[in-house]
Image (cartoon, rainbow, N blue to C red; front, side, top):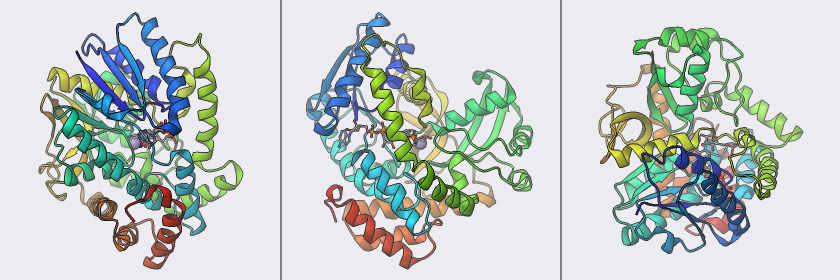
Length: 433
Ligand code: NAD
Ligand code: G6P
Ligand code: MN
């Protein structure tokens, strides 16, 4: 028996995950997949769960798919638990993205005020899940995809009894894919050394067939058309002198920091014209579920690629497969630093290329980050730690502190005003405050 429980199973990303399990079935012979959701997600769970069943059937595989609202039953004796839930649903994301814009602050679901509040809503739920896991599947691995994935991993490492946790993001694999395309070579020939934090990760070195081609790739990235490697962010071309002097690869989320004012103006304009990303996603999601309802559909529809989480299945299932088979290949994941990056505390979560073993990821030591990026990474780590502490203690002053030290916030008073308004807006999902 090989059992996986997926929390937030009603997600439109579930067909991604199923595709991943189908593709890697030889290496990971899954026998049971339990998709768990809550009452509010029941209808989505039903629709996407039935598509999952059709996909497995088409592939001719004997994988039992269970749809349930009973988390305990799903967790019982699971070998892997994956999480992809959204506390407060898209309505909450809309608020995370809209409210900050009124204060001339970036509105984004994993950065700045949006990241803080998504963390405050999510951390109590994930800690609750880890307590269930202690009782029901103490040997299972928790593979967390739920955002803000870096802050959530930090919270699990610091405030739960679960050691076997890995945080996962599709951004590094998205960069690898994007760079492969730039070089016009197959993905398998490219390796990038990643280090930093979730949505604050840098590609320090790029290798093509083992040869260091970082300089060449950095030069290609000075092309103003080369702005982003994920669908949910359209960047703004950086000044070539900046990219060249930095000398490492940035991730799409860096646009919010290094192009702060331009991105804010862009967001405010888009919010008026087409809506924030949550509002765009809300339409995309409706279209996706209309497709999923069609009972002749039995593959992952290509339209899903319009969502930001492309390659999620590859990232998730290749990670699970490597843990299961003790493969010892290299993958970028969120894991305990353990000295791999000198300027980040040993016990904190970092996003870093790691050797994936049966005992989990072993981060590859890089020494330290380049001096140009070190300070920002430390600042965001402090933001994540204080935010996680606020989430656990329900101390509103800590939430204000976290936001005040975030580089996207102009002042402590603006931080206070935003926190007050967002606390009120999200109060149904913030019982700890
Ligand atoms: P979604 O809004 O479709 O939510 C997924 C499901 O979670 C819904 O069916 C919802 O009912 C359910 N849910 C909400 N609260 C729950 C709870 N307490 N327990 C169980 N289920 C619950 O969201 P989505 O767009 O599919 O994204 C899901 C999550 O994955 C989000 O947190 C998102 O930020 C994250 N995500 C992460 C990455 C990454 O790179 N790590 C990429 C894409 C999405
Ligand atoms: C990916 C990120 C995720 C993010 C998602 C948003 O780039 O890695 O962490 O949440 O895209 O995609 P969406 O389609 O929901 O805006
Ligand atoms: Mn991500």
